[in-house]
Image (cartoon, rainbow, N blue to C red; front, side, top):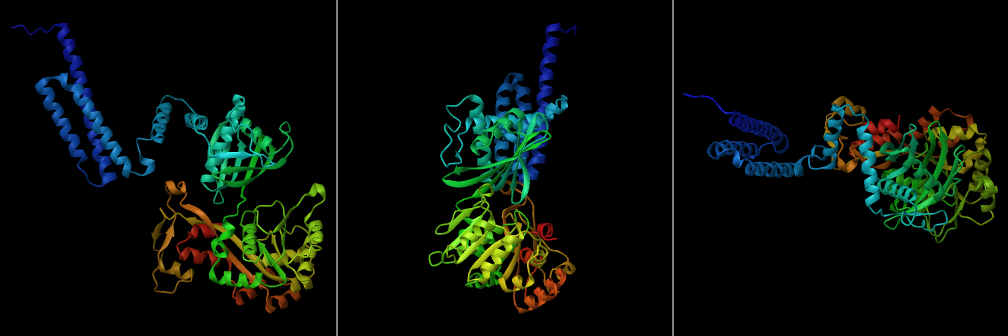
Length: 546
């Protein structure tokens, strides 16, 4: 008996056998993955059984007809795998989806890392951003300082200028859609410029640009802002505007040198002032604070100060208070640096130091224009404070802001800059301290029950069970767990007890003690109320109201 196998036959067996083994391993691996994945995504489904039955059919078919039938079942296999992937992606969280660019990006990064290639993620981000900016027509229209549209808007220009404008348009569109208030171009090295934005008071990375693209974008922004494009050694500032879906945003631009090159910071101001049209309740004031505020601002004369750090919403609160007044029966004048919201039937004047239009000088002129209500953007010095308080004593109601941590600190700050105690006593009606806290995302916030002793510290009666909420993160809130902001407030009303206290130059603790006796809720107490109401988290309140 001859058991000799010809080389051709052996080669045929090896090739077919190897091919069969590869397909078998592929089927087993896929079936195991489907079984595990289906359990985590669906909990329970028939997909693992379908996969196993298909493998059994494959073995049976190849046994009967040979490997010639393999291509047909390979096509069916690929189609079935795609069908499962498409079905599970509909239910899977966004970060676990497969049929998307993000998953392909992950695979490419893993392959690159195994190959020893570095900085692949940064390269992909840049490439994807450049492709998007070149193919998509932005809904953003750039407006020059004089209010006219930028010629071309990226078309009919040289290639580099067009690309820079398209990049700027795309960044503004993304920033506005995400509710950003600031946009920063920050050079981090000789090769990269990082673009970050401030969303709900927290800085977040947007993208990374090649140095050449970033510098071109900054140059385009400087042209829009009417800055000197050749000057990179000194700080500059300017203004322009953007139009997004017929909604106008005024842009305050500021550039300055860094060790890696020129930086650009852009402040986005909603010139339409939609937020101020919702009244005091719309900015997060409690019912008790709202009631007292309305009583105060309707007084024929006096002074209302709003204090807090930069970015705490002081100006927005003042504009909202103005919106509570009858602008048709009163002559309302504002002095601002710069004008942040355009208000109808209100005279608004911008500070211009170069033209000697300071807060103090404009205020003196304003007092000769028969005003009923005056809004001063910020009290920065003794002169402005004294003129404002004198105006409050002579039949005008004055609104203004001051940088201070809380209402009690505001009084001591006025004393420190040299304001006479008698003037403070007779002119001030109230001081409002405020902070902005992020609002928990309604789609992903998660409830939990804290310990009873912890609830008692928050002021919850013993024996009462209550659920609090914490941040989680989802696609709707860009994985932050928060979407939007609201205010927490501390209102110190100047009654006789506060005025009598000022005679002896009191300490901050004494002012706080007397204020609490008069019904003042501190910033922390106001924040705790919003925690108990499920509006924000305890972590967020402790972050801003320490």
